[in-house]
Length: 110
Length: 114
Image (cartoon, rainbow over all chains, first blue to last red; front, side, top):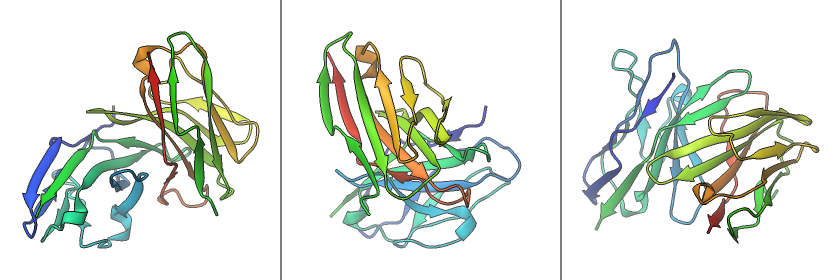
């Protein structure tokens, strides 16, 4: 079964420290991968997708097919980055279903 | 545009009661999804729909039914609620055209089954 694994439930850092939220996926050709974020009391929203190769709010994520990873990185964490982060991949191109990882809560302390 | 809305926001049920959660979207999206979010388990797909009049099972469909009678609405029903269905339920929608486009999520419905 295709899976998305986020090994860390909680990641705590101080403001200004680098952040890396890990995401690994089970190998299956060319995956379509995303990072979604859920801030406190807000709805889930897209942060970035690998196909766009973009940087959003200072975050980047590179697809590493050799390691089957799509880790989310930010060089200098900010307090407002505190949120729940979910890695996801498309499962089924006729339905665009997403399969999500279990999520990592990022806490950024002042 | 209101985007994706969900009704109700909160609900408490007793075991065995039934209820329907309503999801509405005003973006003319073809695809709609229902997820449940549980601590330590992420979001899991319950049912989904690729168009008006069509529905399909997701990862955890047992105990739920859905209907998509109108393109803009996707209903999630619990016929006989169980404590294991205590969760936060999210609806999402997506347009057909580009499969790497994002799903748009509703604000969630917090359901407690006693």
